[in-house]
Length: 295
Image (cartoon, rainbow, N blue to C red; front, side, top):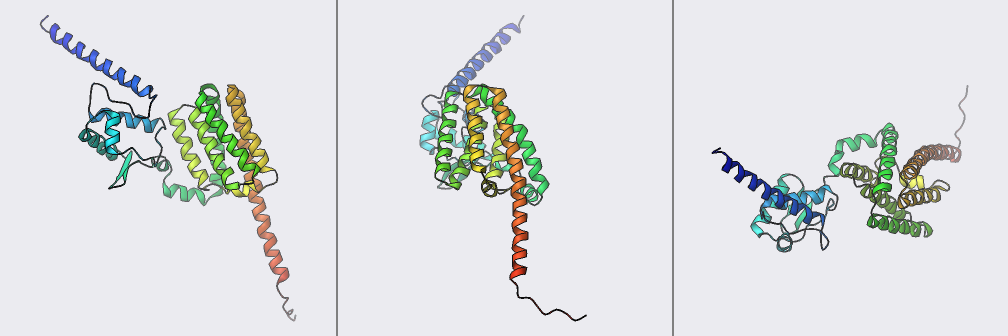
């Protein structure tokens, strides 16, 4: 039994390690007074890396967010500045943050990397991709709204209510740009309310493409008769179902919304074609008639 004392020592060390890890988990979960929590027991760069990674993964820190300055961040983590620098260097090596000399440290654009530039350029040139995108979004939006209705916190519902209020204001004042921005913000907030990390980042990548007009011209859709009114009603329906905690109704409302968008995109494309043909006809009618050729 000579090995028993050594085994007992290892078990004791493992127990203390697990306790420290559990304490840190609790501290990270209970960030009541801020985003960053002090590092307990193990004041190493690994723990700082882990916490910032978790904040990025959970969507708390977004692409382009600027981290606090080195001194402030070291104080919030309760670690030395050399340890913090080591952690930030590791995060940068992993492609999660970028540092600008004299300008601070920012969360890297990891969402934009889901769809590469060559792929988005290819997608934008082919209409079939728009249909596939909307078909893909229909299923994701339904699942996202369904989960949000089951999991949304009061904070999530409050954010959705504020966005709906902004959407109403933009609609009433005919501010198309603000209305389009509220549209993207609403769907992003529903994605956050679903509390599924993989789904959140996938949906954010989709909304990035949507906001950049990769798949279709949202302004052309908004220009269709009664489109803005219908879209507002649909967003309200999704919100009300989530607020009421009705997963089935939320899923149905979200999918009905995408069904309408798919139909509106087809109508908008047809309208663009009609306008093009009308312009060409008008140009030919207005052009001076030439002399007829002799037979």
